[in-house]
Image (tube, rainbow over all chains, first blue to last red; front, side, top):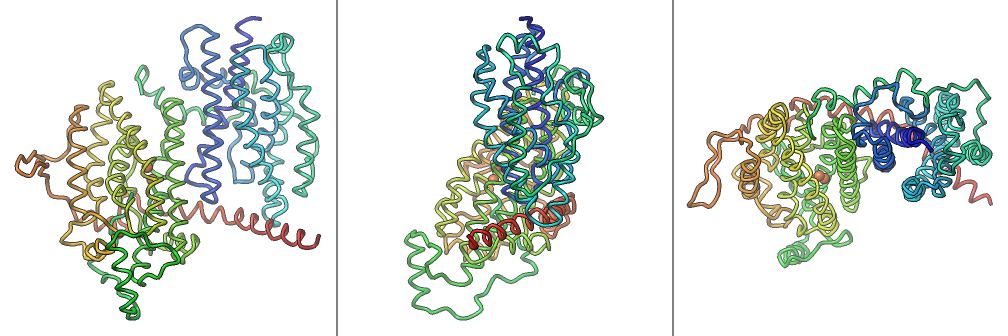
Length: 251
Length: 332
Ligand SMILES: [Fe+2]
Ligand SMILES: [Fe+2]
């Protein structure tokens, strides 16, 4: 197993959590009600914690002296490895919930698998994180149902939110040459095998929410190779501002 | 924090009970309070006591919520993963404080929606401190150090305030505030020991936040007409000037320890008093900010009103869904 593959994989795991955590933190102080504000902050905190662990692993594996902060704050778009779903803008609360719903259901299955990873660090991070993500999934599922089976307005908004996010689903289940060897070695999870269970979970919640499954569409891919949407650059320019403006300073 | 008397008291008379209270009950109430008994929601209380508490607790709650905005301004730009997590957790704590405090105020017969409406319409006040801008990362340090530090000074005595639910909320809140104060000071310490640019940020933050922090304790005692009544009812336990002095005495050595200059040329240790003498506070600025003329008052209120209005459909959906479930459960 090359360290390069493991570095790549740890970056993907860490960047998914980091970018979604950053997105959720944008809500802080502006959510529709105080209880939601606290929940979104909680989820954001969990994700930033996961990112810190995975990016530390990436830095350690790479062995070039980069720590989690160096990876988070001093890489540019082409080197970010998160899926396109997590970098999508918050939009309204429905769009945020649609994103969380699709992602957390996937991340929970992924981490459940990774608790059995042959890499001890990954297994340990996943073991802690899978409990956190079970809560994220419940939060998102419950809001899907409330918004879908709430008012006409909320139903329209959540349907639009899902419609925005749906093209990024297939990327979650993609396996490419960069990580295939990790799957073979029992270190990475074979996400293709998670699709059936994910589909069933999503279908169940959408049925509870009285929402229709979005129609299939052409997948938008590229995040894992650094080919992102236009949104990520703006997110990074905000997140990385201090580290970029004052290189070498300690904070 | 933020429990100071914020009414523009040049305009308003102190609260007067609408009807004369039963003197026997009143005497019994006063005796209990004087004996440091806690008053609980079901207990009889004078109307003016109830009103003063609602005003004070809801102002406090609003301050926690509006206070999320200046610090929230830097969460997405925090300079490291650890700083980001700590700040997000801190701002989340403040939201939690708002939640406990709204709940404590609700035990006095008001609702969260009513209180929020009063805030958005400008009838209810919040701490003046949150109407100032956070310009650099150092402002996040200064807020934790000074603003949460001032909050602790204000709130520690309130753990023994006479109204039970308020006192208990304060016990929970005070634990978290001391963590907030420490993380803020640690940010300042790091910056003050950092590059010339970082040190400049730190000094500028202290320059800009010092005086507004002193104003957080409210007007001077001789101009705080509701204070005496509140002290007697043990809603307040120390006067504004007493707490302000305590804060200055604790904070000045902390600034010196990290080599930052407190922006007050009149500041001087007074051996006889065992306290610092300090310069004149600009009360005109304080009253202007209380009136809603703070530098960022409009931005803060717009942000709160926008979040509330844009979230209306979410709250409506949640209620509509809960109603549907109730109807379905009843039909089964
Ligand atoms: Fe607080
Ligand atoms: Fe605080």
